Image 1: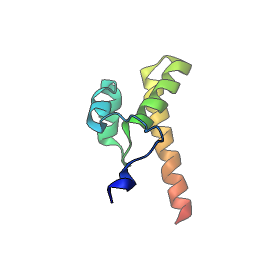
Image 2 (image 1 turned 120 degrees about the vertical axis):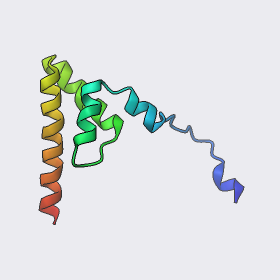
Image 3 (image 1 turned 90 degrees about the vertical axis):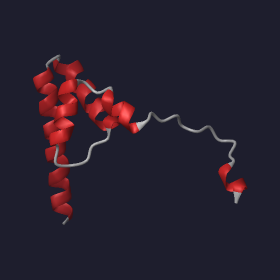
Length: 80
């Protein structure tokens, strides 16, 4: 069974989930605690960074997170 664990492929280095969460901006961390869906820190960081780069506003970044969550909930509702 040990040979299943060996590979020549490069493994992806992943950040510890709690450390990734702790490195989010304070406003994004607060948003995650109030979110309806479970969000990964990587997803929140990606949406936050893009919105902040576009607008430079923390309020716009929070709105982008809320819009992403609303879109995900709508997509799930259509699926049934």
